Length: 201
Image 1 (cartoon, helix red, strand yellow):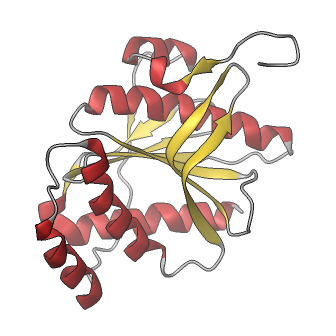
Image 2 (tube, rainbow, N blue to C red):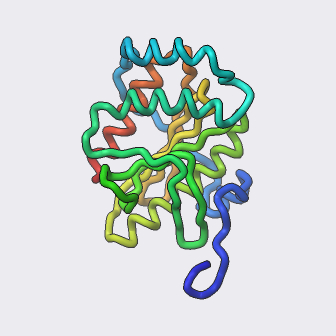
């Protein structure tokens, strides 16, 4: 509940049309982000090989095992960043818990909020709806501490990865969807987005 007693809308309740209206969008802009492909480390290859004993297809929680592994790999270069799973996030009129929330590395979660990751079994449309309103909530949280920065988002089902940017003008940019079969591209994109987040702190 907010100070005025008005209940904030949960991120998961948004459909795609609702999310577009919430951000006053009619479409997304193409985002052609330059990045260098990164080959997976031996450690990551072995970890993914060992995951064969898990079902990685049927459930959203299963997909998160793959997302965990790739995000962990890409974050190793950044001493200033920490990923929070299930972190609480609040916007001006929205609230809820985010699958993954990237912020500055400290022992507590606090703005600036830099990037959200939505894990979905297969429904990318619903994942995008949640990602959009969560990015807006991040931007609102950052503004409360006087931080004016772009916010990033990722939607993934473990196999496909799409990357987003919400800029200060309220425009949202979207990359193509990268398949895990092109893992070096996925890792390169992840590291590039995390690098942009690192610079924004």
